[in-house]
Length: 82
Image (cartoon, rainbow, N blue to C red; front, side, top):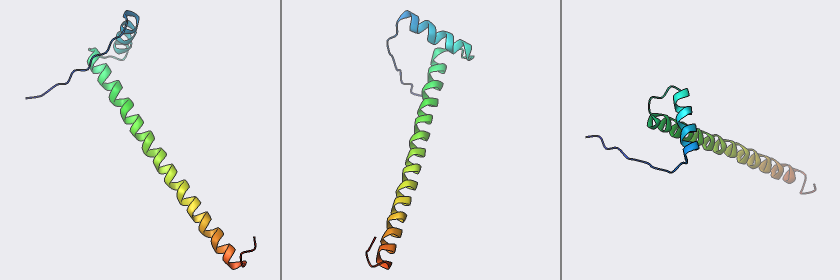
């Protein structure tokens, strides 16, 4: 048997109407389907953004490591005089 979880939060009348209008404008028959889609879509966006940031940081660290190693090699060749 399927188990459902329920999430509740408070909104004022104006916020409720705005949410309801947005849901209807996007073709959702229920608020729950609209809010579910919106929440999961944003969650996936955040996960993707974190992954992209992590990948970029790895590239930067690798670049710094290679530059440092190249600098050490040049320093040894020149006898330490830079």
